Image (cartoon, rainbow, N blue to C red; front, side, top):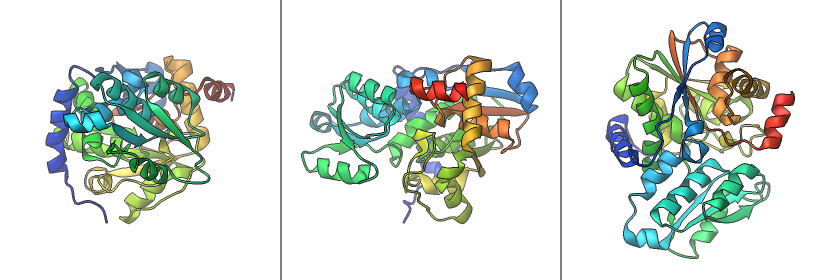
Length: 323
């Protein structure tokens, strides 16, 4: 059963997270494009978390959660599982805080994300997603010691940290009519939805998923959690099986709608951002733009889009741009 948690409980945690991150996370920039505005027929503001530390919003949640560990917990180390961006966030937070980190990563994780995770000093344990799950591997590793598990999204302090991206966004660009963000495990969207309703209650919040990885959309539409195992999407950050138990109640309370986009729409968004705005954005990070360009969502007069990350393998980017 989903954990009973409300936006009223979470919003103060997001404000506290913003204070913890003030000296450590980047205040990421807002980008505009006249070409994008003309094509969409609205004023579009891009919150570029691809310029965050580790190249993605995930640093926010990882640092927020890990900075609150006790001295004994820090000494014992942190364990997590991730295809890449959360792995990098945990690894960098561990380096900054002096916490040993062990990361369970799939064999098909993007090379650029694995290399960065290793570069921050994390111990990586591989697994084959066709044979087992990352949670099972992490469960086995947990028996090795007194690790603190910091999961990628199903954790109050993780989603509170991620919510600071939206809190910062609304302070930079007030009076948004619509807020769009990608949805994988739901930590980003649940935190951002709570933050948005806390400071701009009239702003509509819409999450975007790949069509082939639409577990969150199904869950939102039906009111019960759905799962999809190893969805075949190019947006690797959304290859989660389901929303988290902490996230789901916040979705139902604060998200206004969910939409899906095709794989080709995702690639077109990556191409558009690269060619017209000169932004390197990973497929997961381009979902909001994909929804606008494909017509999956009706824009507001002032539409905010969260670009979640820019960590894409050069070979994948070259293939997308070549298309």
